[in-house]
Image (tube, rainbow, N blue to C red; front, side, top):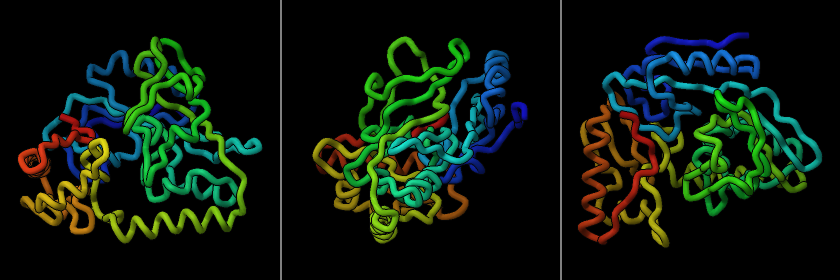
Length: 289
C-alpha cells in the first residue's frame, strides 16, 4: 500500500472549522506495514509532527505552518469478541457507534454526534453528557518510531478533562488501535438511546455548521456556554466568525472566516467572562500556529 505523502496540504480543507494555511506535508498511513516508512519520513521531514484525526477540535492560523501532519486512516471494520470491541484509530466515531448499535453493545451512546475519529477521541478523552471515552477503554495500541507498536492498559494511562497521556517513558505516541468494554443490550434500545442523544444535540448545538465543537473547557462546577451566554456572546460575530446562536460555546465559520477574527473573538470573550465573573476560561480547541 505504501505511505501516502502530500505536499503543502491546506488545513482549511482538513479541519471542520475550515481555517488554516498550508502545512509542510501530510503523511497518511493506512496499514501496519507503512509504519516503518512513517518513522523514516518523520526523521527527515524537518517540521513539527502533529497527528491529525478528523480535524474537529482545531483552530489553525491562516499563514503557512511548519507542521508535518500525520493522519491514521486504518479504519476497516471493528472486531468484536464477546462484549469487547477493537477498532483502528482511523475509525470514525459515528461508524463505531453504528457497529455497536447493530451488535447490541451499549456504552457509547452518550458520545453520539461526535464527528471525529477514535484516535482523536482517545487523544482528547472525548466526552459528552457526563460520559468520557476513558470510562469504556480497556487497552490502547500505540506507536512510536523508537518502539514500534505496543499495547498499554488504559488504567496505566493518565486521563483528564479533554486530556490523555500515555504511561511515563513512552514519549508522545501515535494512537493506532483502541479496545472498548461494552455492555449487552437490545440493538433497538442502543439505537433509541443514541438517537435521543443526537436529537438533543441537534436541538441545542450547531452540529451541522462549520465549527470545532466547544472552544472553551467547562470550569469546575460551571458551564462555559452559560458564562458566555450571560456575558452576551451567544450569536456575537466578528467578520465571518461568530459564536453560535444555539450554543454560545461553539465558534462557527459563517463562510470565508479568518483565523485572526476567530482568535480575536475568543480573546474578547475570555476577557469579558473574566471581568464579569472572575473566571478565566481555558481553551479546549487546539490552536495551531
